[in-house]
Image (cartoon, rainbow over all chains, first blue to last red; front, side, top):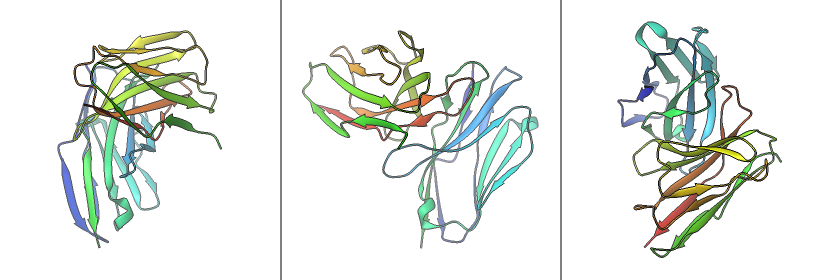
Amino acid sequence: AQKVTQAQTEISVVEKEDVTLDCVYETRDTTYYLFWYKQPPSGELVFLIRRNSFDEQNEISGRYSWNFQKSTSSFNFTITASQVVDSAVYFCALSEVGFQKLVFGTGTRLLVSP
Amino acid sequence: DGGITQSPKYLFRKEGQNVTLSCEQNLNHDAMYWYRQDPGQGLRLIYYSQIVNDFQKGDIAEGYSVSREKKESFPLTVTSAQKNPTAFYLCASSPGGGSEQYFGPGTRLTVT
């Protein structure tokens, strides 16, 4: 069975600090996709990134970066120089290739204070 | 503008009443999904549909029903059989094939 664990329930930082959100996953499949979503206070989930299991290259998009390590089954998300607008709940998710169900972690609430 | 709309944003019902939540998308996506979110928890899949006139149960389908008569629409009915219906409901769509899902703004249902 697939499972996604986000052990950090809530993280509080001060603006401009760097912060890393952890995601550990379990799957028996060799081919799968990993995702990160952001849920601001408005409630709508915003897609951030998709990574397939064959691509272990780290990705950077502005202040966001993702570290995918198959050896430790982790897909961690780092925000550099955090801003108040980054305050949200962040979800990591997993899906099998060709099987469209997403399995979500329980989310990490990030609070960035000025 | 392309996107997913859910209506209404807030919905209040009395216990014992069925209620239907609307979800419409104009992204021309084949697949659509319904999730339930409870406070402090992740999203749990209720139903999903990969094609018109076909849908499958997710992890928590009991007490819910859906239909997929049109590609653009995937309404969810919360029946009186659902023991604890108060929650935040999110609809999503996807082109399929492992692509990311795109979410609507959600409907917050309160049953008293």
